[in-house]
Image (cartoon, rainbow, N blue to C red):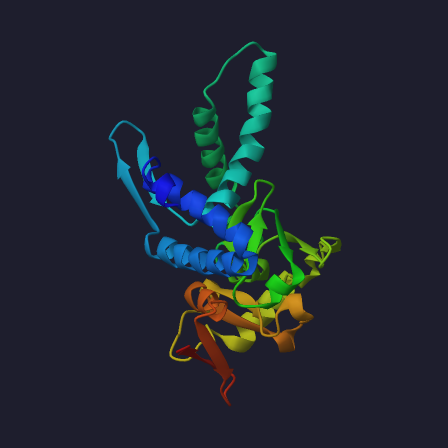
Length: 266
């Protein structure tokens, strides 16, 4: 490492150090990677923003920063719309910039979005494959591969996304055999969403009164651990508290009135 430090940049040296640690102590390397990934996702949440500016010429510039997980889901949507148009244009001998096609695809997503889904934030998102080991799915610190390109997210983020997105979990056993592929029945049915809104009225976190229209359905006993998608195991949480209930930095308890009290781990 000392010899490399005289020739490599700081980033290159970091990569070499990670490879050495992975070879010498794989368990410590995986734990360090999981913790670093968790810090990165928390930092990404704090840096998320959206802004727009009217150019006065019929266009609006949009500037946004989102987490890697959200970015991957958005790109999946846009590519699915842009690729057919790209191939169609090529068949006609027309070359169109792909960034323009992606922009048109983004506009189409907005234009065709079903406004009936707006009050219910528990709608289903784009289908995404998540691959992870079954033991990582069940513990606080672990990682998962998002999509087919191997982008890493934490196990906690994977569990949170699985509550209200059309994710296809590819859960691997100790020998990397596929233990589970699919089981989309984990998603709450629209009828259940309506019943939950009538029952819970608002976010069930203590001291939160976010209206039911802003909430998502959460499995109290995680679906990954055998929790059922039934009314007794579902509760409404706003996006912020839904993220917190999956955050390994917090624990929670059910109060006598069925509300949820969060406590930060020390």
